[in-house]
Image (cartoon, rainbow, N blue to C red; front, side, top):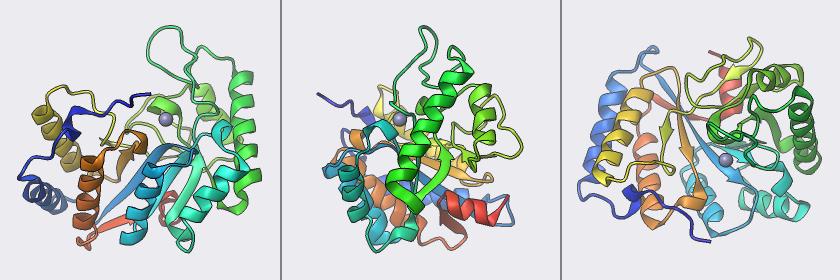
Length: 265
Ligand SMILES: [Zn+2]
C-alpha cells in the first residue's frame, strides 16, 4: 500500500534551518504565560512494529524529549507491546502511552470521518471505549495513562461525557474543538500538524506550518501532531532539527500528558 506523504516533504527548502530558528525565536518572544511555554508531541496510530516507529522513538530518546503515543487497542497484541516497550526501554519516563480509537474506523455515512461521532449510540461508544481501555490496561499495565485521542481529532458530546464518567484524565482533539470537554476532563488540543497536511503547494504548506507554530507556541499549550507512517527521510530530518532547536530554548518546556496533569493549568 502506498502511504500518502504530504507535498511539503518532497524536499526541504534550503533556508529551512534559519527559517525554523527565526520562527521559534519570534514565538518565544511572544510567550503569554509568564514568559514560559509548554509543548507536547503526540504520535498517532501506534501499535504495529516497523522502521518508522523505531526511528521516531529513537529521535525522542536521543534528545530526551517526552512523547505521547496514541495506541489503537484492537491493533495491539502482547508481542507488539513487548516490541514497543523494548524500543522505549530505559527511558520510560519520556513516554505517555494512551488510548486511540478502538479499531480506527469511520462510522459516519456523511460529513467528516469519525469513529466516536454523533451517528453512534451511547452504548456502542461506551463499549468501544471500555474494551479499548481494558485491553491497553491488561497489556501495558502501569505504563498505560488514561487519556483518549479520538481518531480524526473529533468526537461527540456523549463520548466526552463517558470519558469523564469512566475516569479518563484528558481528551486530545484539535485545539479549540467543540463540544467543550466536561469540567473534570482536561483538554490537551493539538494545533500543529506535521504529516497530514492537505496543501498541494509545498510553499503554501510551509508557510501555513510556520504560522501554526508561531501561533501555538505563545498560547497556553502547543500540541504537535505526528503521523510516523507518513514520514519520509525529509520529515524525519525536519523533526530532528525542530526538536534540537526547541530543546535549546529554556523558556520552552517539553512535556507529555502526565507532566501537564501534574503541572496543572
Ligand atoms: Zn489516527
